[in-house]
Image (cartoon, rainbow, N blue to C red):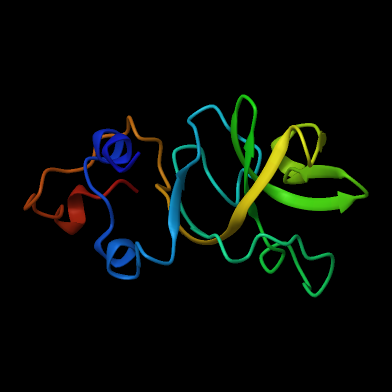
Length: 146
């Protein structure tokens, strides 16, 4: 998974790696076609998961940035989403801007909450956008587009 991110990005941010604890956290990858939590989590993001925070909380946040995002294993893959539990159903709630529909799964047979997302590394530009070569100089003021 980390190899996939390195292949796509060319690098992983050092600050993300320095704050990791492989004994405490697990890591997940938001697929390139997964827009469930866009724009909070962009496709291609690397997420840090706390497996000790598997219980879905129902309140205690004031805005979309405070609401916990969970990493969920499904029969056909993984999802990052806001979650709600209703009886034996796990409701995956996407970001409203994403245009992804709400999904519902049986907690005993179709879905398992692996933990809460507690960290993220993501690109702010698409991965195919080239970056300037290392050491390339900044343009002089008259070269900057007006």
